[in-house]
Image (spheres, rainbow, N blue to C red):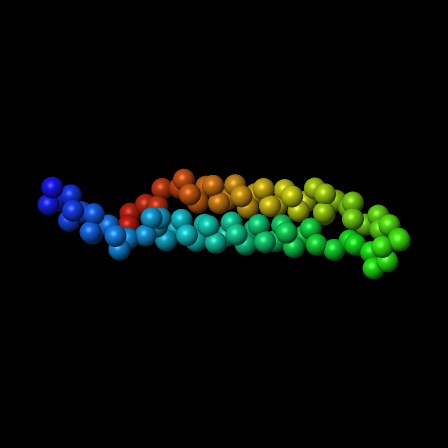
Amino acid sequence: MAKKNKDQQKREGEFLFGKKNYMIMILGVVVILIGFALMMGGGSDDPAVFNEEIYNFRRIRLAPTVVLLGLAIEVYAIVANPGEKK
């Protein structure tokens, strides 16, 4: 029983993931933010005028694909083996 409590106290100061995992998570967040930035724009200043630019390739195909890629990177960061903890 005492050994179990000692091991639990030792683990309290450790992070759940390794440094590698956190770096991959940061990369995933950056990719997601790039995807959302690609979705911006295309609106019209005058609400009575329709702007066809809102349906271009960048906003309809590229940006959502980049966001999904970022989410896939996040999933990989969670399941990746952190390697040896130092």
